[in-house]
Length: 160
Figure 1: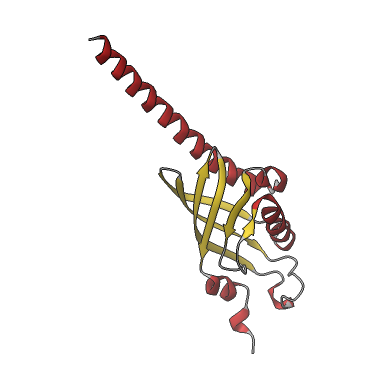
Figure 2: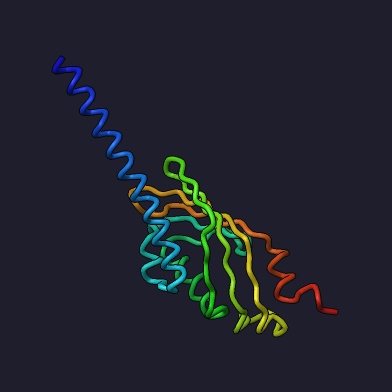
C-alpha cells in the first residue's frame, strides 16, 4: 500500500512539473510577442541561446543567437517603425510551439538597395513560426510567410 501511494505521489508530481514547464514555455512565447510589439530588442535577444538558429524566407541562411536577432530587428524597426504583431493561434507540442500571427506596418525608410517606391507603403502579412524551446530559451525559430504578398503590397508589381 505504501509503495502504491508513493507511486501515485510520483505520478502526480511529474504531472504537475510537466504542466509547470508547459506553462513556462507558453509564457516565454507570450512574452516574446509582447517584446516584439514594444520593439525591445535587448530583452528579445535575451530569450535566445547563444547558438540559436533563426530562419526566415527573406534571409540567406540562418541568423545565429542574440547577435542575429539584434541585427534583424534593428533593421526591421528602422524600416518600419510602426511594426506590430498580432497572434491568432498557438499550438504547443512538447518542446515545440507553433504560432500563427500577422505582422505589418508602414515602410517608412527602405534599406539601402531597396527601391524608393516602397516608402510609405503599408503591408500586413500572415505568418507562421515554429519555435523549439529548451530550458526556457529559444534554440530554434523558423518563420514562414508569403514573400510575394509582401512584394505586392509594397508596390513591386506596379512598376513598369
